[in-house]
Image 1 (tube, rainbow, N blue to C red):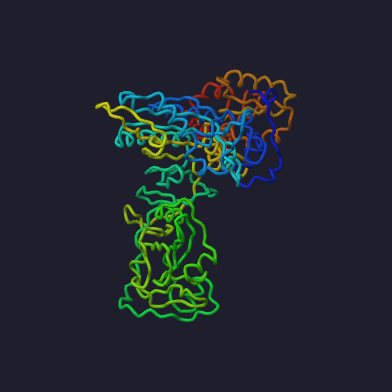
Image 2: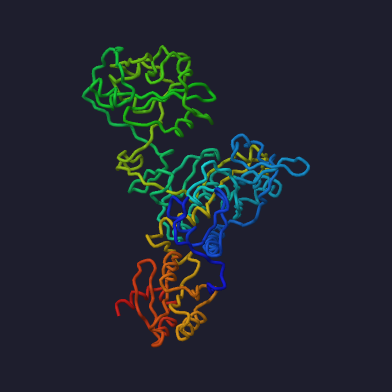
Length: 571
């Protein structure tokens, strides 16, 4: 592609609303154009990268035995009848001219289930995995970070249908392996982690996280290969101080003007690990108190799952007063009125601890398990760096990540709700066993930039780059330079793989744009053209070499395959 024939524009200044590198560089380099909050146009170069990502995804999904189709985006709301309340205001809803309720598809579990229900009748037609690549729509209240959190986004979603849970396990593993291949081929530094299923339901799920400092998710990882989102990460019991073994008598003491856990510990001159923190929540099942060691925080997703509730919000002072306590001084003692109390497993190992006194400016000291009103124990604390790995016992660390893929074992959640059945070998109706597998393609594009950029701009991996090389003509008024650039372009531009900057701009502007755009190899056709010499720049390292143009043309393919660039440098 000649830039003079392309739809292309770069910008000198950083976009005012861009908070992260991918958002800044994609806008600045003219790969995307923001049309509204969380809404983007993919310009020619951005679209080429997207298509390269899609191509890899299609190859691996097809190799895994999945079959591609295309579902509608505009769908009757009734298809999502069982989940309309769950989606709430995030679903875009509209009416047609007759008043019928429609929506823009936020996800496609139900449409695929309906399709299979109407198409598949016998166990002989299963297993089956279908997928599509399509735009999705969700009204993100906090649309931010460019393509990371948008209202319209591009997704690959796949759905497997099996006759048994063992069959689901096989389908799940096939897609998991396909995802490992996809993200490896894209050159991403990623980690698969155990994750919470959230509103999707089902049993196991795995997220594929691209490591990035700007990632919205915190991950717990171990060198043994264990990884989990902090919402899911298992926590082993904390090792407590065993020097305190004889239980004392519970005692209410005055603790004036202390509001925080740190204040209480300092006032009573005890370690924070001797305190029990009580957090009160309001749920559809009533009020619930979560108890954790004073050094730890409640992981609300774990708590929500343990309680089996959909809604979890902080209780008000009035709510807390109704159970016989005071906000800031809650202690889950037996005198409290009807309330669910979930204690973290660590509490079982604690003796003679401090807890709220259920009165203003009061705490109990020497409290023990038998003094409390505990409904049950569970793992409800948030995992942190330095914890022991639940798999190998080693020490875990935290990293931040961008979620680019998520796979779920849904089981029969949707097939039962929608009566999606098959006839087994005995002619008996059975519910199909379902899996769900998503990749955020536009998110993946953004994640690629986050991991492949420097202070000058983007550095595209060759496998997804919009072009393999960019030819920059230093002086378009020089006929020798123009002719040599045209020769290189005509020889190498196979399948639109070469970009020729033939604009009448200065060499400085062209080089700045080339470094911003991030094509893997930049070929400068300048003063050396009269001697048949060009300068080659490797964008990832900014190393430069001078090489005869004819030698570069004849060795270009080998350069990409065997890193001939280093051979030129060594010579």
